[in-house]
Image 1 (cartoon, rainbow, N blue to C red):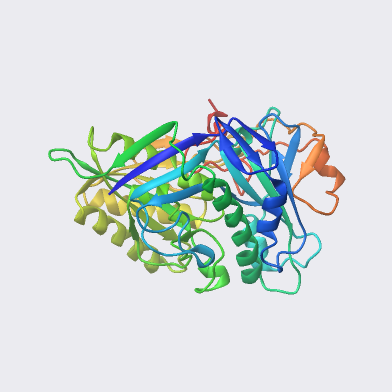
Image 2 (image 1 turned 90 degrees about the vertical axis):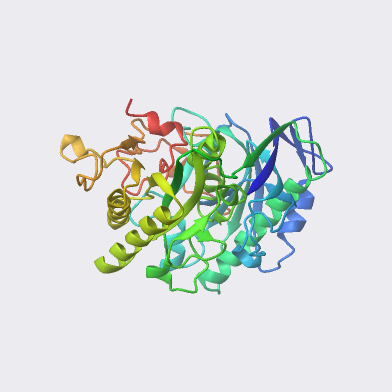
Length: 426
């Protein structure tokens, strides 16, 4: 697989009379973007805000963050499979992206009854409401340092969670597509070529991210939650090229993080030099029975061995049963002779009374810590809050409490080692 990625850095976003990119400046015609969102009359009320790094702004109710990217050569479309988009295989040809820029999707559910499905897609059970600050001492997420177009929707009433998600996320993608189209015909100032053709004489390595499935909560046909080519259900492991990941083959909820996965990027860049990056093996979690967890883990290890992997990096996306399922995969790989590194956040130390890992069997011999996900200081008060169409609760403008650990800490969750919050403990 060979993918050329052209990057157009965004150093500033300005409101103007047209939508185009020139020498780092992304000019946006807000009227045009509003028309694009309103193409579907079911969208209802919404607002669009332009946010710059360092703004005295707190973003609340965010449900996904999408990097604008467009496929130029090769099959498929960026972020395939979701919201009715083509499922053609991506990861080859040419893709252009707006670097340092994102579309932030926020959904204000204050005026509707929030059912379990919507609650699940908004945040992990028991965690703080999702938010991030664009400035201040705890602006530690990657998107706090980016130039963002924030689209705040009022969740439509009178429809189920599936329809709400399809309508609102489709609108987000339409904006992302339009912004990416501004650089479709331009020569990129930065270009990187990822050619994953195996080189003789090098060992093989794979990346095994564990991604939670919502199937246990919302059913097999659901479109809610992280999707692989639009599929959110529990399934046998997916064999995905690293370049497919870069084109957004895995998206929703953490789209920007998944498409800019630093493990994938680093393995792509080191391919053919120190090892052959054979593939990503996407492993689903949230199986309901122990035997299912063990079968899934064994299939991953068998697949990795079958394609010639001698080494693997594996990640987990949260604690509890999903971490246990990650460890089962690690154990199965080690038993197959595949040397496996665990890249993970640690447990909340709970004042020194809790171990760093929920379980730590003998096969866990190489671990890279991403910290606890804690933010060890309070969040400063802000002058502006976006993400809610009705007036945000006053408490959002004030100082927010510190996040003591990663248990459900949506704000500081860092499952791939991207955010600066992973350095908080060091």
